Length: 163
Image (cartoon, rainbow, N blue to C red; front, side, top):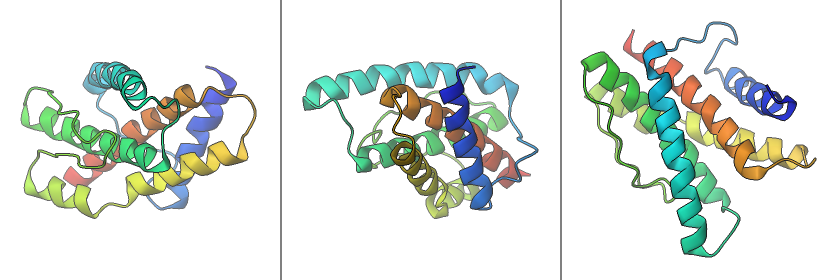
């Protein structure tokens, strides 16, 4: 694994630990969601490229970045719910950049997602990391590495919420 990717992953885990969302040891994941994660991120890369072309901007705003963290959080929790309920993994990509993210699940998880500060804190952790680590790093790859860890940590939180 690339050293920079490891730094970002470590920063995201530390952010989750420091904010009380993860013990730093036992990460609960559903192995069958690995393909769902891959497919989601491939589509997100595609949509990011289209967004950059449509907006005629190479850089995302901090609000757009924050929205992507909220989007990944919601989709990860939704994936756990779909898996648990035996539902097909289909995602709505609306809200990926504007924060108006539809979320479909049972009432317990809907309440959990609406109340959680986790995605906001992860976005802040990422933005702080990028500010502090100005060495040459592809910002898109760095963002997606942070989002990958947010997906996995969100999955862990959803599993914990359902147990």
